Length: 212
Image (tube, rainbow, N blue to C red):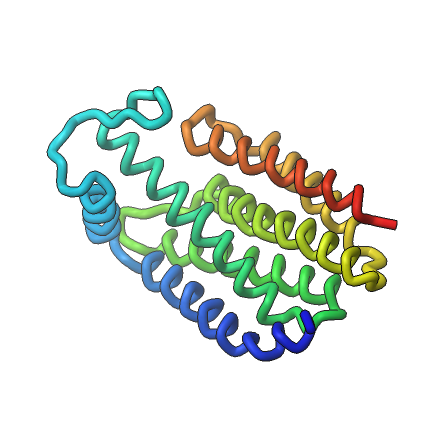
């Protein structure tokens, strides 16, 4: 049943996968002024056009510039790559090839992250930032960890052999933790990532309970 549903919607996920990649590349090619304008527009929409110099987010006061940066990092990097990895996984996953789909998906996410940062290096006023690549991969690995844990539970309930699935959940979470050690600038969105990582660990623990 799961395999049939995945095959049925693989084209749908594939379209989303390609669309996100194209959008990311187009955004990376924008000059700094245009990219900032897009970020400011998104910030204004988020604030419902409210004119303010400070924004309170979960009891933390951010300047409007910090809030715009937070949204850009959270949505434009972490969130977009989480969506990219999620759609990519179900594009490549046929119901049995979990490891293959996982590896291809993570490689695709890394390639896109590297490509967009390289394009930004040649875009006027922008730069190549390793920290952005790390944040992109944090988003991708989060999506994979969550999906892995959920599939472990689904397969367990259906009595299917999911050999190698749970270890990959652990590996994904471990890599995720290492990335945080490499990238921790004490910014607000990093604390958000810590929260997501804790959720991933809890899901992995639940997956362990369902493993044979």
